Image 1 (cartoon, rainbow, N blue to C red):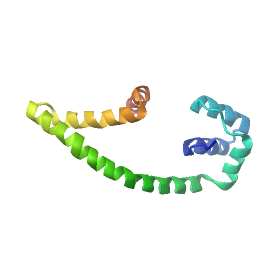
Image 2: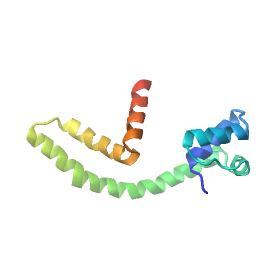
Image 3: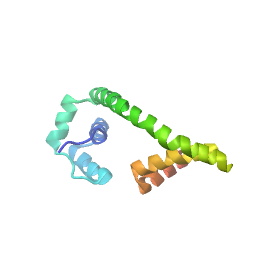
Image 4: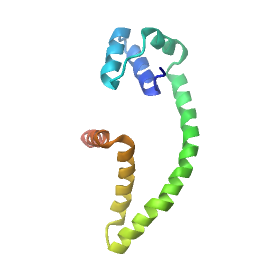
Length: 127
């Protein structure tokens, strides 16, 4: 089973804080609600893929994904956002709110309602 970068970074960060492998496995299971990686797998991450290496890989992955997302975003703006803004303007509604509502609906759809609420509340509490 391949583990995502967030889990790998969590394991490496925990290890750099001096936590033991057993403690890290339990923390991964609790935090991510998954079967944790084996100690051997995490040791390989520690030896072969330090934080700098993972950061480089994440940047490369983000660049590739950004190109694919760019075209999709432009289409979404043209086909979905602009008509909503014009409709709000014609109805005398708050255009800025209509735009942000569109944006937040995309984020909520992507994350799911509960995660969106949790992240939004965490953000508001942390300001």
